[in-house]
Length: 138
Image 1 (cartoon, rainbow, N blue to C red):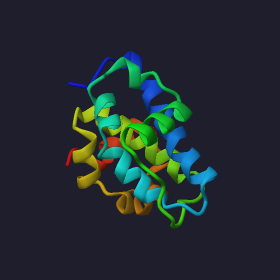
Image 2: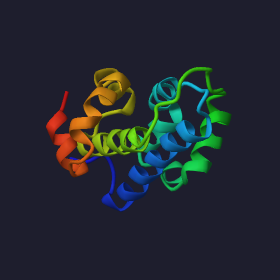
Image 3: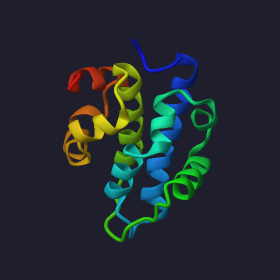
Image 4: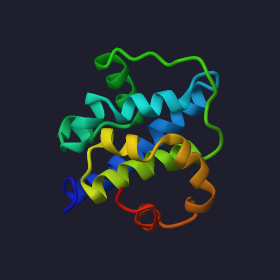
């Protein structure tokens, strides 16, 4: 059973991909991995997991502002994840959460950012659902 109505799925997947990419591209001197971890563990992401319409319908910019304000989050100095990986990782995590109806906080502990960075080469060309199935429920 999926996490919420399919009607939200495409927007949530696309917006989370754009959010992760926006952080990596706009802040090349900031730690993208730290941001992804903090976001996936946040109340903001939990509200998306629970299909709260307010957060499920936010675009990437709105999500970033809402997350930074409500979680009192500031980007940490570090290295950005380069290329197309941040966008794909955001989409992967969002689809995985929906497909397996698992809390995002649990997913990030079981499928860490470092694992996805390494798996990106072999998974990113696959259909997103197939990539999620290949990683499998953990």
